[in-house]
Length: 203
Image (cartoon, rainbow, N blue to C red; front, side, top):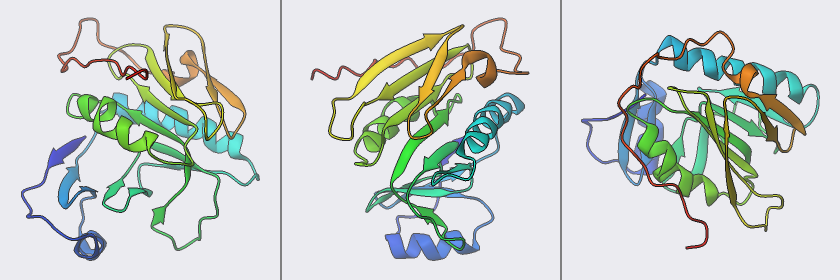
C-alpha cells in the first residue's frame, strides 16, 4: 500500500540519502515521497504467486525477476517499488536501483488502485524498454494487460477474467489466472474501490 508522506519535498539526491537510512520504503514522484506501508495476506500471496513463477521462468537466462524491494527508475524524477518487475538488462549485485524494465506487475489495493491504473500506467508506458504492464485486481479474478509487440509498437489493452492465460514477453511464458490467484480467498461481496476510466489508446 502507498500513503502520502508528511515529509517535505526533496531533491533526488536528498531522497537517495534519506532512503538509505529509512526503515520504511518510499516511492518518489517529482519531489514528493510516498510511504510504502504493509500489505494484506491476500496481496502478498498474489505477488508471491506471480514472482515465484517468473523467477523460475527466468532460469539462468539474461533476465531477472524482483519482488517488492527493487527500486525502479521510471524517469529522472520518478522512482517506484513495483510488486514484481522483470529486468533483462545487466544489474550489479550491489545495485539498489534498476532500469530498463521489460515487464512490470502491480497488484492493486484500496489505496493504490487509482494510482496503478492512472499515474503509474502513464509512467510505465513511458519506459522505452517496457513490453508489458500487468495490473492484478485484488478483489476479483481480473488481470488488466497493457502490452506492445515491439518496443516501437502501439500499446494495446486487454482484460483476462476468471480463466485464461496471460502472456509474459521477454521470458516467453504464460501465467494462468489460476496460478496468479492460487490459495487466494477473494471477498464474497464487493470491496469499495474508486472507479476508474479505462485508457483509450486512440486519444
